Structure formats: C-alpha cells, structure tokens
Length: 147
Image (cartoon, rainbow, N blue to C red; front, side, top):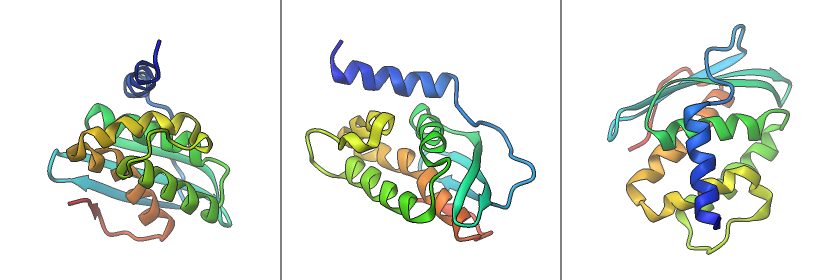
C-alpha cells in the first residue's frame, strides 16, 4: 500500500466514522462556519481550561474532506494550548497550500490532508474547520465564511 492509499483510507475512515461528532454541552465557546462554494456547514464547540482545549466537538454537514478534516482536527487539538494550536494551524495550512512533497512528520494523521493540495478548490473544504476553531477560540459569535 502506498502513502496516497493510506491517506485516502484515513480520510474515508474519518468521514464514515467522524470522531468527536455532535454538540458539546456545556461548551465554553463555539463558532459556526460555512463554505458557500460547496455548502459545507459546521459548528465547533470547545470546553476550555484556561488556554487549553479540554474537549472539542463539531457538528454539521459537509463533503467527505470537510468532515474528515474536522474529525482529524478535533483529535489533534484536544489537550493543546492556543500557541500549540496556532503552530499546528500553520503547519496544516502550509501542507494544504504549499508544494512540499512530504508533509512534516509532526502532523501525524493530519498528514492525510496533504493530498487535498492537488485539488485547489477543495482546500477550503479542508480548512473550514480550522478557521471555525480559530473563531471559537477568539470567542467570536459571528458565523465564519470561507470564500
């Protein structure tokens, strides 16, 4: 099995059985995200302990890449503080939009999103949850739209 097959399997698994899916109650913060180009909509819910995410869930509907990305993101950010999340966001963004042949090992399962860069129109699908997470961390109540 080559790396592309492995990444595809990770995306399919997280789409079919998304982790941390459904509302989180009580939540300390939440934000809504929408990608009008494809109709993806999601809400990210956070339970915080100071600057650290103690629990995170997402809810909504979207394409396989959007759902898988949100599922992978929730697993990756649980237990991390804002600084670590900001660094992780930068690594994911660079992986989605850059031209590096191999994603950094520090991404772990998030490296599965690296194939999205081959389909520029789908980058917004993969990044919607990350922008929505940032909005929730900023305690913004306004919906997030990626255009």
